[in-house]
Image 1 (cartoon, rainbow, N blue to C red):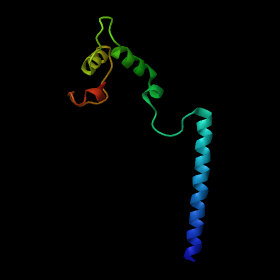
Image 2 (spheres, rainbow, N blue to C red):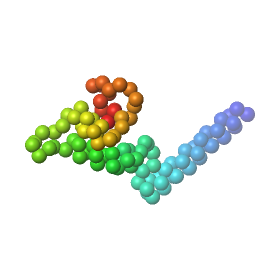
Image 3 (spheres, one colour):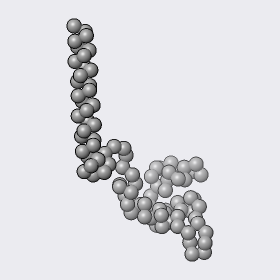
Image 4 (cartoon, one colour):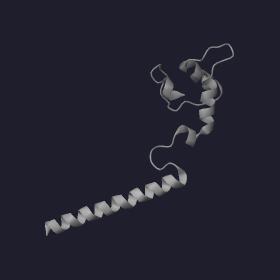
Length: 95
């Protein structure tokens, strides 16, 4: 009896895996992405453009540091992503 139940469970698992794989492939063909977190470019393209604009070289030839990028973003009205006090270790996550 246990052998029959075990073989049925194995069959069901194989069937489910095949069905889900097919669904993921259809979604990938239709939209190009199926799994994983959405990137910042997908969630907030304006944020990505602002970050690239801030990090681009200035006409004087320097590039801002990460701290300078954050200061520029905060000056433009961007809010930090966490309420923690800013430290040098959290500078990249706060922009």
